[in-house]
Image (cartoon, rainbow, N blue to C red; front, side, top):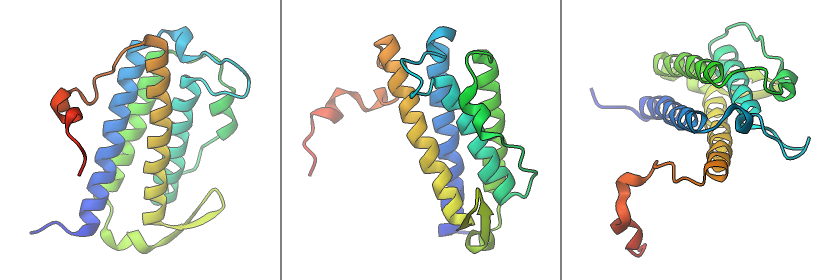
Amino acid sequence: MPATVESLFLDFSAQKLEQLAARIATCLDKLSEDQIWHRDSNNENAVGNLVLHLCGNLRQWIGSGVAGKLDIRVRDREFSARGDISPSDLKDRLRAVVEDSAAILRALPAARLTETITVQGYEKTVLEAIYHVVEHFAQHAGQIVFAAKHFTGEDLGFYRHLGQAAHSQKTP
């Protein structure tokens, strides 16, 4: 049976969350615990806070909003943590919530995409909620990648497969 637009959207959304979570895990592996919890000011979030925030957001929007699980999120705790969670625990938490969210997306009946749900007081279709979550996850993943590059001075290799030749071509 050929893929539908709905199944392509759900599978791509799950794959994108998994890909970005793997990149975040790579970053966590390259950073020291001090770097993971570093802040230059109180107006900034540490990498560790961003990971906790992504876990809370996924659990709330996908787990609770889409799948109907109990909403246990305490958003303020995501930002108030100050190094009291180990890098391995952060990775485990992120892996678990992404695995759960990806499974929810892959099992979601396409007819639910147009259903209206309420999350954080926002009325959204399930499709809009998923799109929001993937976009939000990508934005914070980019912040974490930037921080890892800043702290390590390394190319993290996510696009190494493109090689130099791909970068020397002019875009049409």
